[in-house]
Image (cartoon, rainbow, N blue to C red; front, side, top):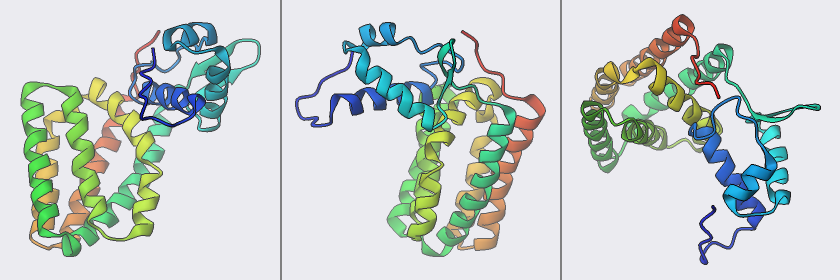
Length: 223
């Protein structure tokens, strides 16, 4: 059931939409799951109307697929989908790392080092949720520190898709094994002010993931 915070002034339909969206992005609703209006309404303690509106909105964002006479389903993610988003992410985040090498502020560098350490701790503990949290934050700091608002906006448009993919590849590919070393190379290049090396390290980081996706495919859980 939704947690109706009295301080939250968002319309009910917006709260329902955000909750369903987050469940899809984080894998709580598995790709291919049928989105049953009655069941979802009961689980969230709302009527079917905001559920129906949310499903229609999520369809427009390609997170839900509606099939005539069959109903609505959480969209599947193909290998092609993942490769396409990684191709775009590779270019944009590589550029962000390039600029971050000369524009990152000292306090941002301290944050980056902290997130790197926290990520490594999460890897040692095998805590997937913490790995995803600190991996996301590590890259976010680099993006913010490029201090180019247009580039930041472009990358922000990818973040929701990237989040969904993170839950998939951490679950299936055990990416954590090589990530600390790859993160460290990016961090060291930025810290030394080597823009070309920072971009190259960021490029390799995404390229290895892309190669793994192509080799292994997207092995999603089934309902």
